[in-house]
Length: 229
Ligand code: ZN
Picture 1 (cartoon, rainbow, N blue to C red):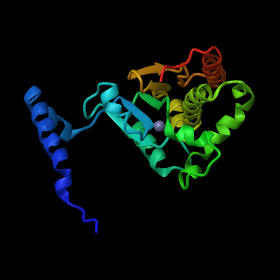
Picture 2: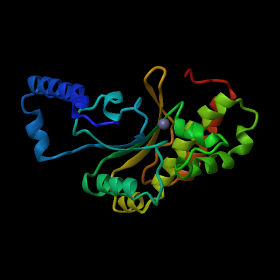
Picture 3: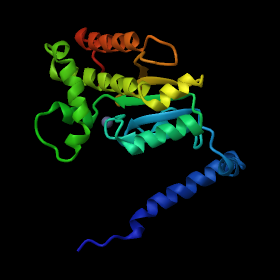
Picture 4: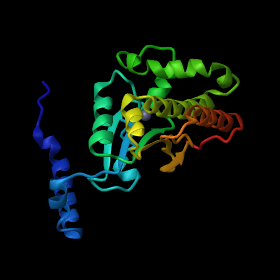
């Protein structure tokens, strides 16, 4: 019979003590400062994939980025978790940048492109299939890895679009709050981020910018500027 043992967590506690000790040695006031307040400038909406940890890949310490992660970095209006994190980050923490960061080789995107059933997650990734269906003509003619790369990018751009149409961001922009939304893609193979040039702010022209970003993603795939994965 399987018995849970907290000793299994021992390596984690050891790592934690080492990390906290190292932080205190480099900055004795670090933790006391964080106790009083968090003032992150960024909200990161990323994939749950263990290979894409927000703080590490953008080199930020605790307190510097507010993070929400889920499978395939989706922004769904019915997702109370994501919407609550967004509202808290924008309305209370007053973050200046909202980042949607997806990654190539995303298992969620890959599963959405397959016809086979995966269980409960199929409901979650259903909207990725809608994105694929919307671009079915442009994706035709690309080979399977190119479609996956293009879809990872198109999925990110779709989430930027969804964010920009939330009441939370629309009201923030109406009251003149300086907050913008960005779409980034992360490459597992080299650890580098790329801007998808889909940044949106209070100004008009969202539609044009998003369609341009989508066209650029599809052109990258078509022109065989394959991302080395
Ligand atoms: Zn992923």
